[in-house]
Image 1 (cartoon, rainbow, N blue to C red):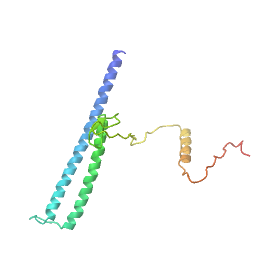
Image 2 (tube, rainbow, N blue to C red):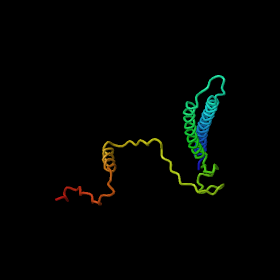
Image 3 (cartoon, rainbow, N blue to C red):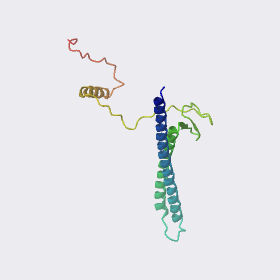
Image 4 (tube, rainbow, N blue to C red):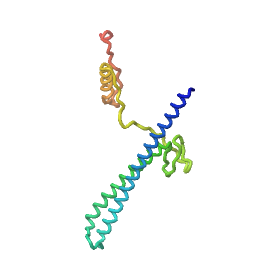
Length: 172
């Protein structure tokens, strides 16, 4: 291996680590922001409870009005918690780990949690955006035809039928 190949390999490793660090920092910042949002909602809940108690000398709110707003805040907190869990799982993936239901992190290739022994389910990641492939117009037309044939609904209760013969010379 030449010195240039070693340098190229080293630079690629540095680039990969830098990208990983940027992604890690971005996810960590998003999690911190979501936790701040939850804290703000907790403060609003506390204020609503205090005002609905009737002990506030400034303003008071009826219990019915406060209850509706409290339920909305609780739903929002629940939604944010779900988003945090998803972000934490993505953060663990970036770090080369996965999270167990017990809350412990394990290496990404582990089959079982070393803390509680629970088995990990096999995970599949799907790209968020489809990858665009440029083809010739003839290939695109062929693919569009295949897609339209494949996308037709299939009646699973109907008796199995053989495909019609499409060769005009064989048809009589």
